[in-house]
Image (cartoon, rainbow, N blue to C red):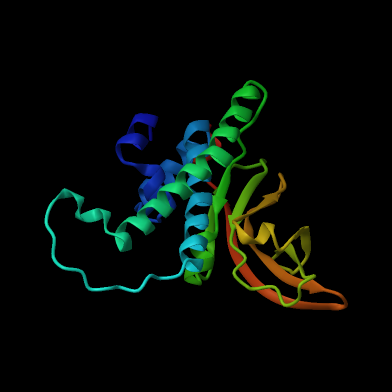
Length: 230
């Protein structure tokens, strides 16, 4: 897939929303490994979608008060329509000013030396309770996994421990995630050199003297010949 095709197909938006066909998804993933612009846009889309879900989940639903019928272009300015619309607009503008634009500036400053690391999202698998996500990673390279921690912490001092295990149950990598970081998609780096096979991320809720399961995310790593040739 060429960059112009990705723009024409609105591939970034459809990829984040899970609306691409399997064939187009594979073509787009092969494309954004080498396209820093598409990779950045997808990362921003995943983060913005998660922030939007959190905002609208927490925002109170306004009571619907019957209003007399009015006609005209300015009808959309009714409070029950305008308030959520402006809230969503402010959220978008704030995200661009606080996250997207500073990130673009940092990326531009280090573009010559920076390497875009392949990444994959497990957010949809987490939400839908999928049996596993197929990750077609480039052989011999590290890559990132993004996912949500949907379990609420048990204690005020709880910290989430995320472990990556292979099919035999061996822990390959582990990292701790604070409650603050768990409120948005978590970035977990898978080291280079792992073989193809079945893996899972095991999420544990740890507090003083206690450890409780907080979720599992299975995934399968398969090296794609289409990706290896880049």
